Amino acid sequence: MRTYAAVDLGASSGRVMVGRVGPDILELTEAHRFPNRPVRLPEGLHWDVLGLYAGVLDGLRAAGAVDSVGIDGWAVDHGLLDAEGALLANPVHYRDARTEGVAEKVWATLPAAELYAATGIQYAPFNTLYQLMAARSTARFAAARRLLLVPDLLTYWLTGEEGTELTNASTTQLVDPRTRRWSREVADRLGIDLGLFAPLRRPGDPAGLLRPAVLEETGLTGPVPVTTVASHDTASAVAAVPATGERFAYICTGTWSLAGLELDAPVLTEESRAANFTNELGLDGTVRYLRNIMGLWLLQECLRAWGEPDLGGLLRQAAAVPGLRSVVDAGDAAFLAPGRMPERIAEACRASGQPVPGTPAETTRCILDSLALAHRRAIGQAQHLAGRSVDVVHVVGGGTRNALLCQLTADACGLPVVAGPTEAAAFGNVLVQARAHGLVGDRAGMRRLLARTRSLTRYEPRGDAAAWRAAGARLGTAP
Image (cartoon, rainbow, N blue to C red):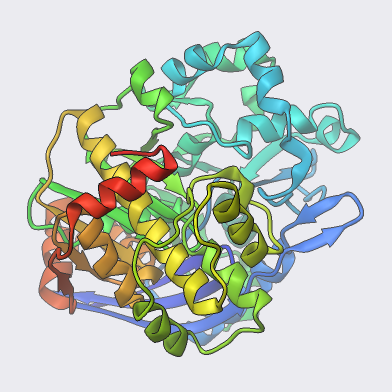
């Protein structure tokens, strides 16, 4: 049996998990959890990446002796380094307003349809491509000699070696999903220097050894290798879907809901672009064909506005509220920014002529019904656009703790939902490290080990399918 440290960075917290893997053994415990609080400076919203790095070091100290370390985290955001390898500033947060209106300027040079045909990446205002175009006239960008995505930046600080992990690189909107290499066509037409990026790495590749200073600070005894994992946390989470066959859809739930299919090739049609599906790269040459949905961010922001009430009690009250009374489009960019979420949801219901939620329980039910409706639409459209049918929906991530959301998703999709594991990204991280050491076999073998060793919950669909269709029609988001 071997022991691995999985550094898993989320939008609201980071954690260092310790995984133990052996024949028919897969264990995961939390060594250290630390907050991830954005900081608003006069020039915009930033990540406190120095605080995150300190949390990683504390976590490795708490983890104790490990055979390898792997890092996964969120996509698109990055740090810029100068010619000496020093960080020029804390990474800008993807919710910052600097990219407003940038996409339209990009499309004037490279039309949206051509950009999608080249990269397969959905439109989102915060894509790395748009961040680069927004920053290109700044002195900081002029001084930059290297760009590292957040997990790669922390790996660099741990090892002193630079690399760009492929699954996360694919979210930059600068990678061709067919060749799995940088798209020189896109970069050249937009004047982006691909020399900013470190060489591509793939999950399982070695990423270096912990530096002597890191060993001293964490108390670890070297050499300790760092292994490249699927560093996009969604890619790690999808790798940890405990599916027993190929006819499945997945929803990775948390601050975002990522709903879609695992495919062997991208879907680059104009119909796919119009539906705003993305083709992000996954483990072993796969494509994560999915749609980004606002996710439990809506509820998290409401809880913050309400003074953090007891979530369990609130969900019990929400379960008693009549379903589908009011719904909103959970993919609407109007809900992207923080602040005033209960009021914005109420305004959306009022504008669409629906009853306005009057209590936290009614607002919570509106959010969960709306998320289930968005899951239904995404899974249905993904099957249509990819020409593939599914028999089951696997829900992984933090949303698996929300039984009401899981049941409503089964009801809305008309398919069984299998919920678990909760810490899917960390499990995927650990299993890729274990596979690099020969302890597990292929992707199917990883999933069989998860299915044998994890406790999963199954939700059967119930209720009236016509009611869900009608709710989607109210929003103009059918099916």
